[in-house]
Image (cartoon, rainbow, N blue to C red; front, top):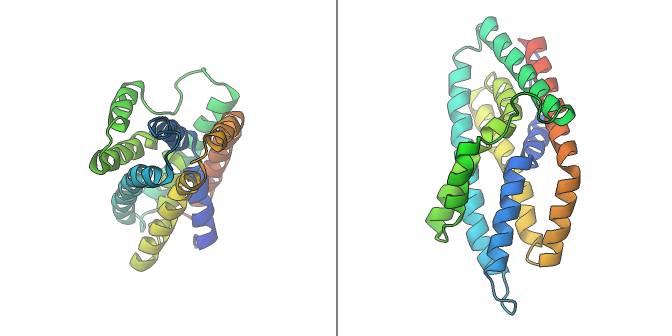
Length: 227
């Protein structure tokens, strides 16, 4: 049976971290923080304090979700049918993401449910570290319908590994998942840099989403081929 490798885990986590949902929300959140800082004040300490709490909440939420899913999937790793059904599900989710890119507005789109968007905006309005940590966790939950397909595919492959390998792969994936968010916090203290990043993000949003769809389909096919 083929085994997942660390480079695949790291690359998948990085692509997932660039998903439009989590990255777009952090862009908005960073703009709000910068707007609240006086022009003569260095925004970096406040950005790292607020943004760090937000990213930590998202990291922990994604990690705990992954632990739960891996624990559940590992119960069925000795049975081929459930794993194959999961592979089919992952392929279907990947094709769904690609449909949203090629045919936007046709049918139901994978994304953050509209009813959750108000909760996210309200959570992001909190300024305490605890509140921002909770808002990061909430966004982590809300982005699953948007970008969780890659995560599910990787988790299905990780579940076949020994316990220590599962944990190391899972932690590595989630470090790469939040790496783009941390990198952005490091460079957006300048409002002009933030504007350039936001512009580039909008221009490449469809490409990022298409990449997520392609990687998800490939992961699903790998699951089916190795089940």
